[in-house]
Image (cartoon, rainbow, N blue to C red; front, side):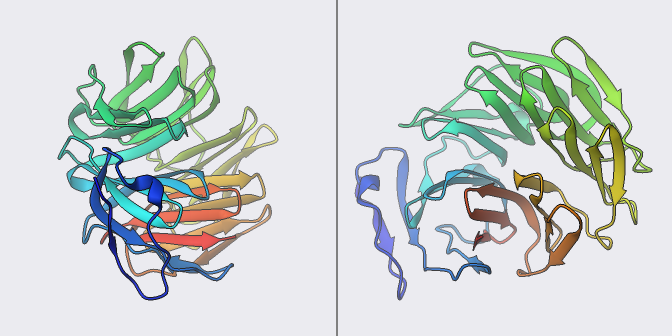
Length: 305
């Protein structure tokens, strides 16, 4: 199938590798160059759709998902619509590489991309809001009150309570989930334990594990908007009432977060906050000198770091 380029002044041409790809639709949008150190909007090939999740393999291969079964892929300098095979709202995306990408969404929607096409994975019935894994045979999905684990062959479900919104980890035996009215839950290889990080509320919006001894989470309590496990203790840190619902790290002292209309950056000692877009932001991803954020109104934001 021939890719059709929406021509934009000063933009690059479509990646010829997309031509003939059965997973791509004909809606594509080229990307203008963006000066380093600032946020720019990358034109989306869909209009108005809420984009809820983003994951980057590298600087030239990025996936974004959203409402009505929307899956977008940035290959080189072009964003393209992919054929997802569903109209369900999609919420989370993660992968090990370009031929192993997972997406979760409402009503038990789980999709897998093998490098050629998306296919549905059966066995889930609850909503999926977040996806994370340590490898092709260790993928975790969190949503509703349930955590699902893919072992390379099948899904297994564990009920933890609350409304789960986020999953992250560092290995098959070190996995964290959190959400509304549920605190943190930590999997250590055999059992789940409940952890209260001391934020003042049991509702936590996202979790990001950097190592076995360093974990971040966020909530809405003034003065305790981020909570950091470091040195064996949970430490609360202010963001001036900005509430983050997504976090991504390039290093322990180079952490990026998004929520509401704000983007935050942790430099190892303090948070700085900026509002480069007027859209509500839902997900942020970082990879090797780049950061992407997605949100309402089909927003795709990019920053060269």
